[in-house]
Amino acid sequence: QVQLVESGGGLVQAGGSLRLSCVASGRTFGAYVMGWFRQAPGKEREFVARINRSGGVTHYADSVKSRFIISRDNAKNTVQLQMNSLKPEDTAVYYCAAALFAGYSDRYDYTSAYGYWGQGTQVTVSS
Image (cartoon, rainbow, N blue to C red):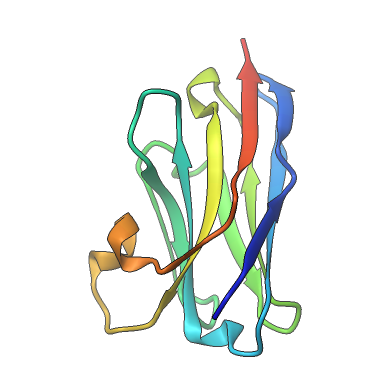
């Protein structure tokens, strides 16, 4: 069982930066692939970024590539999302998610791979 709690959301002007954090409970954090997803009003939840168990491999949605950076600290049970050059279209509720590793594939780009979710944190980017 893993419980996830996000923080760091807020209101920022276009071009600004925010850093989201997610703290996980439990002693097996290193066994999970961690992902960030987002959901804008009226839209489906979409993949943003993910990081493998060791933190050595990351993958991003095309829409955030080169602007966002995902990282993790297994000693502190945390995963972060550094968001730079924010755009109004980045406005959404951002969710942290955890998936037990089940093989190497692109399944971790999809919500169905993740069994644990945080409550979400609102990010609003004004133009």
